[in-house]
Image 1 (tube, helix red, strand yellow):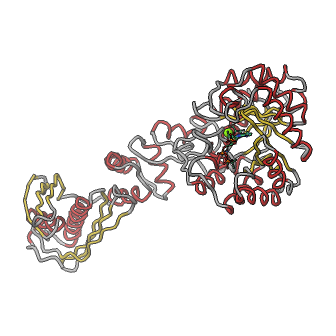
Image 2: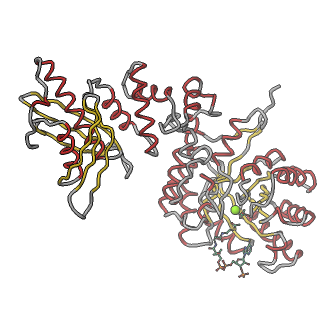
Amino acid sequence: MSTEKDRVVIFDTTLRDGEQSPGATMTHDEKLEIAELLDDMGVDIIEAGFPIASEGDFRAVSEIAQRSKQAVICGLARAQLPDIDRCWEAVKQSERPRIHTFIGTSPLHRAIPNLTMDEMAERIHETVTHARNLCDNVQWSPMDATRTEWDYLCRVVEIAIKAGATTINIPDTVGYTAPVESADLIRKLIETVPGGDEVVFATHCHNDLGMATANALAAVAGGARQIECTINGLGERAGNTALEEVVMALKVRGDIMPYYTEIDTKKIMHISRRVSTVSGFPVQFNKAIVGKNAFAHESGIHQDGMLKNAETFEIMRPEDVGIAGTSLPLGKHSGRAALRAKLKDLGVEVGDNQLKDIFVRFKDLADRKKEVFDDDILALVTATTDGDSNRLELVNLRVVCGTGGPAEAQLEMEVDGQDQSATCHGDGPVDACFKAVRELHPNKARLQLYQVHAVTEGTDAQATVSVRLEEDGIIATGQSADTDTVVASVRAYIQALNRLMVRRSKMGPGADTREISYKEMG
Ligand SMILES: CC(=O)SCCNC(=O)CCNC(=O)[C@H](O)C(C)(C)COP(=O)(O)OP(=O)(O)OC[C@H]1O[C@@H](n2cnc3c(N)ncnc32)[C@H](O)[C@@H]1OP(=O)(O)O
Ligand SMILES: CC(C)C(=O)C(=O)O
Ligand SMILES: [Mg+2]
């Protein structure tokens, strides 16, 4: 049975509560940019700032008010007449202005302005009336509502409604409430307070116990039709309800939550990145919806499932939140299915046997590296698919080098199936290694080119080493990739020697490089 869905209004307070996070201050231009993005994505109400707080806040709220295309522009004001006047001065420039005024109503918060219950009730009446005389869209909030005595909460909400508030916001200022309480509180207020069914109830949750999203959604189930939230959950202490979370929860679980918003969800990722940049608050990797890993799968079983059917491990499409697509980063937990898919993406078609070889090398690399990048994979392919006959093979290598003297290489190498070892010194670790290779496999090949480049970033980057050898006009190259540059160098050198031997043998019988004595590297 399909139910008609109710509209839930999205009230974004990134520029007010979000900016109150220590260190999240935004410049004037950044605020204008974020407001424009919020407006474009379909946010219904933008709380643009606290106009009495500073000249800068006043200017930002005023300018956002002038520029907004469709959103209601709201400013915050304490329960003080000068605050409300200043707020009105700023928001009145909007075609759709709102004044949001608040006061802390719990016992702890009543003590801050040192007002008795009756004095506070009188102040609420006076300030909401004043706001309503200026603006016909007035929101009132009993700060710390979830720790306010029930009877007193009902009393002050009724006063605010009678004084003309059109939206009653019930803040869980310190993130104390639990979902079941959140739903009950709103439901009971609507049922109990005279006029409660004639105003919009809003929910404003903080994330101190990690329940802000759950509490906001529960409040909606209880009858709230406005959710206050911020991009990336930015906000005081552990933050506010994250806009992207509630919006996507309502979209994805419309089956059990018959509500909808007018947010263009495809714009979520872009605004998330901009807010992260301008606030300087990075988004945690595993953050719901907008975290780097929200649509990324590294483990083989998940990647295989995703390649067969994306719904196996994703409950929403990345495109729906503005992400280009799922990513299957390769790492130590990945399997063949993802490796094959990655190779295909990179335009490399391999047979089953080649894939097997590449996979062994890939696992070996992934064990040593945090993340395996596309370039790493390509380097592995080059190293694996050349199919030479390997008369020389690296078995073991230890290198001692540093400031104390010449480098020493202890090399163990298989030469035509026989294990041999040599220790050589050289002018640096690579020179020592190459000398050891030549001691075990004397040759006169001339080193035409030795080139190292890091193909990936970071201190664990994979280096690709290219070696080109020339001998009697025959040229052979070797290439190897490894996180250890010296190991890559030795592998590349050995590969080039193997190829040289193959080429020589193809040019005529008996022509074996081992009969040729070593000539100094050029
Ligand atoms: C839960 C929330 O997010 S509430 C919003 C919090 N945001 C902010 O505070 C950011 C903007 N704030 C500011 O820039 C400054 O605090 C100002 C400009 C508002 C006030 O600055 P000051 O006059 O220097 O006061 P200060 O910040 O030291 O103290 C707050 C004053 O406001 C009073 N106050 C606090 N909340 C309210 C309220 N809702 N209604 C009326 N008075 C209030 C306090 O009692 C205190 O006044 P008092 O010293 O006379 O008791
Ligand atoms: C000003 C109010 C709504 C607030 O931010 C809170 O109580 O958390
Ligand atoms: Mg808040």
